[in-house]
Image (cartoon, rainbow, N blue to C red):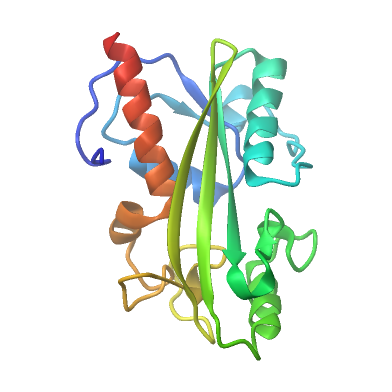
Length: 207
């Protein structure tokens, strides 16, 4: 695996991260801080609208968001979409994770609904899946990251965002909501997808 903390020697044109989620922007900026990627967000390119996410898959949403930026701003870009998939709920909330309890994307409401639906289930296994879609010179490249774990009975910790306080990654005693940022960024689904993405960019630059 490629260390996110090691210096990646590459010369890249600016890359737009097609998201308006400040938590995701913060996490990814940390992950690429020791690389030569010039990370731009939607505000940097003057995009102030909410990019549509109408696909029924995580992969489809990532591609849709990246294509929107490329088609409207003609810039190399990448987007990601993430879902929490719970075994006992047949994969819910999945692609609808951000809006599980409604269109306002309220993390506490989403967790409350999830825990209520899991109340009588012994099987608490779940996994996070992140898919990154990158468009370079019009060509789409996909990268995936997954982390398995369990959903605990009540939120623990106030770090991270989204479902982090109720998700305990396998092999750990703490939830993502309890782990510090550095520890989470070594094992998370988003970190794994970004590792593959950064490795791809490095290899591309060496050709």
